[in-house]
Image (cartoon, rainbow, N blue to C red; front, side, top):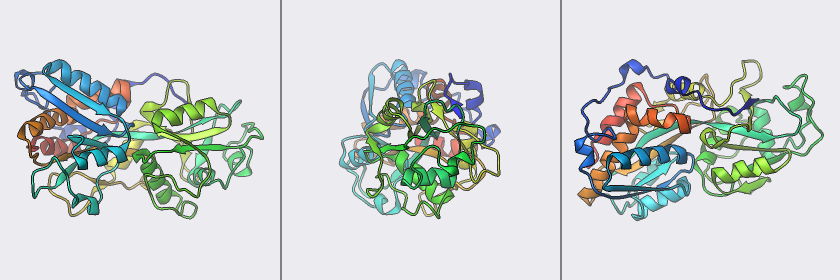
Length: 366
């Protein structure tokens, strides 16, 4: 078990092992920084909607960007990834925050804010582990494997003293207590990443396809948003749930993970999650400036990881909106922006080829 404590910013800052030496540092004082005369001349209002997982990071980014650009107002509504994608398509948001990239069939849809005959871009802005949180009185240590996690959330393991859990936790007194799995009630990128992980690491148990909607056939308690899941787990007894690690409050218990118990157990740490990103490749067939990733969750590391994307237009029908989106997203993906979010959000900063590629893509937004 890990008990959530205050963040160790220095350790997290080096999280995604994509060779920091390859990062391009922007010192020009232009829109890739929250400071500088070019950025401070901006004016207008910008609306983003989407993933609640990145709420803490967005709060930092918005505050910094607005301080440096006092004539700009940036709003971000953490209504969930699905809501964000819908708002972006309908023109209700200039950018979406989504814990998954648009799928191939979604890329050919209609996007109200984008110029005709242009496709949207999927730009990673936030990498974070998904924590498995629990509340079991008297349990101070908890090890879980892929199959056991999948069986718990499928309702196939229903009591905390089940032999399958006890076998992994020698010396731990597990209570005769019903397990209450807690899942998201809304369409959620965190849910999609959680179920995608189970489908890859426990395929013989988790037979449902990855989805932002929790499988209707499975029991458990449903809660709205990251904060809802956290509250349900904290206020319950025998509860277990999943949430972006940045949303887990200090003092809350988080399980350790091993694929099958034969390897060392690890928790939702940024460097372990970053190892999965490092081992993953870009989705094939996309535009040069589209950085959608195909995550290989079977690689060494902590597989319950989410990559949150800014879904934006390559070219906006309103050039003034494009200018604001370019400046704001360029700040977010800059070295400065990524590091700024670490103390509050615990994200794994983009680095190496991923960082330089996404920074160039953000700078191309019109």
